Image (spheres, one colour):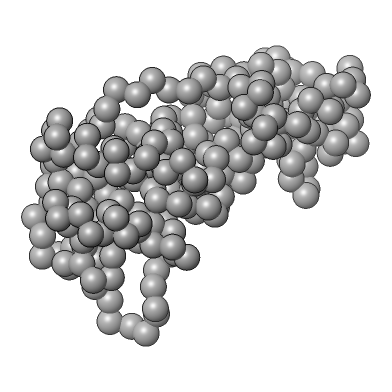
Amino acid sequence: MGISRNEIKRIRFLQTNKGRAEYHQYLVEGPKLLDEALASKADIDVIYAVEGALSDRIKHEVVSQKELSQISGLKTPNAAVAVVNYKDPKWNGIQGDLTLVLDRINDPGNLGTLLRIADWYGMKQLICSPDSVSHLNAKVVQSSMGAIFRVPVFYRPIMEVCSEFREQQNGEVLLAHMDGESMFEIEAPKPALLVMGSESHGVDKDLLNHADFKRIHIPGNGGAESLNVAVSAGILSAQLMK
């Protein structure tokens, strides 16, 4: 029983981008998310939990509440913490009818929700610009509600991905933008990339000015200036996947 000081230090290091990159591991917290990891056959290295939090059928190390709080990244520790091994997925080009492509998404909660949207619609992968938040960030993992285990995430230059997609698959690149065509007035192309920008930056100007890419938007009748990026992605995905 218990956990060594060195292991506590190492696990706390996994709460940083540098630590995750060095050890190729990340943290999963809470019995519910742990169930998702087990069901998805995630490569779990070790599980720490307070006594009685998990079934005896799940191999784990029992720790005190104090020890759990020392390795948890949450303000209120959630009974169990798992260390999960991670390998970068192999890039085999765009797969499926629709793929979300995210430009400079820096809010962890938004990225986690976008992962859930990709998972909900059965997308084969999620693509992020290299300057987006890490999908292994603890808040992203938590807010993904298990989608992190099922949807491969790639960090690639967006213009490169879009150009490659156009050349190899002759697919449509759609840019979410207020000045675009109504999503109700275009015929949903297949295959397609749906590029979403952050609420603070929007889609990169080089993408917006590209002659082969099409801008689309969600018509609205109210007074709101804009929609949250994840909400917008969910609405547009529903329209394009129907």
